[in-house]
Image (cartoon, rainbow, N blue to C red; front, top):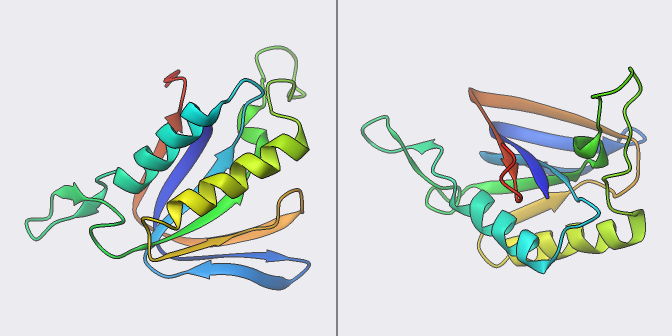
Length: 149
């Protein structure tokens, strides 16, 4: 699994002009599922995202997680995180998991995250979405369950 995690003051996602998910202070998680991902990748990603210490403590040091600060998550599926642009100029998405299985993995991520974070909202899997955010910092972290970066 791959994720782009952004610390936000607020974020929202809309489909067809209608707001389908929004959060206040917390993390926007753009989440992609690879064709070889398993339950262990899923568990690793949930633990990593909810435990990332990227919120400031009283001393101004990034030392607190989204759970520690009572923050929220907005999870938006994004298969394009598995786009391979090494050859040519058109990305190949063959490394992305097929939609039916990927949708279930995203749902499982959200279900598990809801056990740790007070509010978890989502986009709509497979839809064309409009994502708005106010990045706080800015702080943006890239995660890969295969630890490629």
